Length: 370
Image (cartoon, rainbow, N blue to C red; front, side):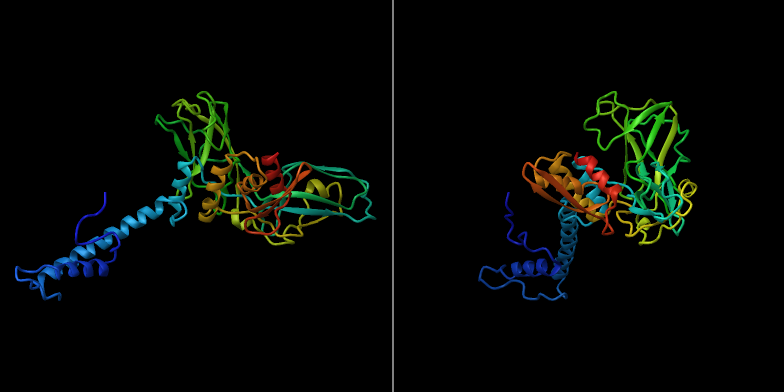
């Protein structure tokens, strides 16, 4: 239904425009002889003061309505909590902290007495950088005999098993939501790393309840608009509800320094004892700076990731889908694809907050796409 009043139309929105249009309307009010009835348009006229008051109120209402409307749409939203809510509408859950990754190179001399030594560097081997931050190898690596160098992919995180969630009793609420509480200073919950047991039974971490059945013991870890991580469970239809009164018997996850894990090149120089005990003259260093670490999924990341999530739905069909899906991997900023029909498809990625992705990040992309 269109606006039919003779005083204003939708294009007058500011105080000055509204007041000017109303005063213009007053000039059209004439007596039976055709003379203008109101000739004083100054603030000394009580009627003009009233018009000014209404113009001011209308401007404030327009400002409020326009800003609410702006936050309703993803492309125009300017507030963090608005894009978080937009994501939830399409089943996209904001990610918590992302761990930085980097490759280090172990070196020994060709003339070393240990040149023939063969050593397995297992996943989870702990390295430390010059600031004392903990790094862990992301996969098993073998340093073969008679080779002088060995590359090891690292992730900046550490196992945390002292969470306040251990021993908590499941509440009787219809929708069970449990916050992680206070974590060690300067460290954040790393996205996608929690393992959970309730009453001794293992519950599985998922990204969505959309594929969960009523009896599936699934849970999610999301972050609210204040960046606080919390656990939540299914509703009994999509994912099982934990029984009220059951006890959380085990919670283990990784902590990360997030953005502060993006260390510079040459920052990891200490060889772990598990390696130096076998190869005494081994040295280690990272030739490139670490990258991909962030404290949370920021405003711009969410605005980019939501459309990609809706577009791909976790499945790659076209060459562009592979690039789009790669960009949904945590810590990936940009992705491109080189496709040779019926021969091969090569995906190139660039990490957040850095220039070198590292093998650990590449492995995550490969595992998602393969």
